[in-house]
Length: 239
Image (cartoon, rainbow, N blue to C red; front, top):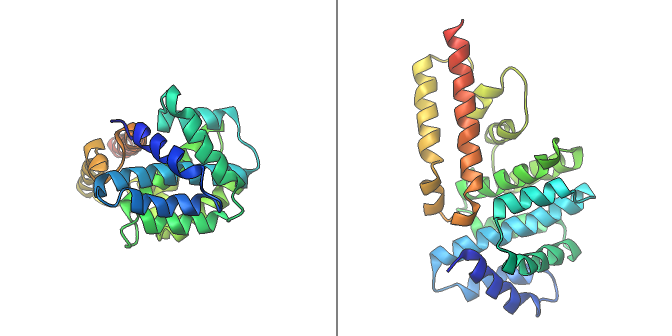
């Protein structure tokens, strides 16, 4: 059964009785899926992405068609489940709780409890993909994403690497993407590149709880890593 079928059933069951917003939905994930840790992780990830996307749209002040399309690219929601996803999205937008409260709850539900948690990085990557859909990460979105990273305990250097995968930071961009200092021997660059590709292989992401339906996050991340490595390699070859 697709994650969307399970999520749709869950949203139908829970959202109709939720009176204080997605906070109740988050807590319900813990109890409804308490007997299946893997399914709980996948549902929790999906709820986090939908709810924080809604909060980011509210922080930005407007939801563009480009952002809607980017949302659909990541989620690949089947037509039969779009209404349920929209219900959760709307519930999050209407909720009076601020996005920081949401982020804290999502970190508790999805995270490992350690800094630079890879599953929370997956959520942040998805949010960046949506934010840049109209061609630019707007100031309000940038503030939102940076604060989310702080709440997720993603350190500044790691955040800069995530940012560089989505926003052109200039000449140092490819090195920032790979998280390695400019001037390091090429063998170290290659070693770092291979580790990143291995760590971010779609199978690895699925194994840690990323639903199959969200694999776009993995493929776009690996594409950015490949592009950065190729840029460095070309630069060193012609140096």
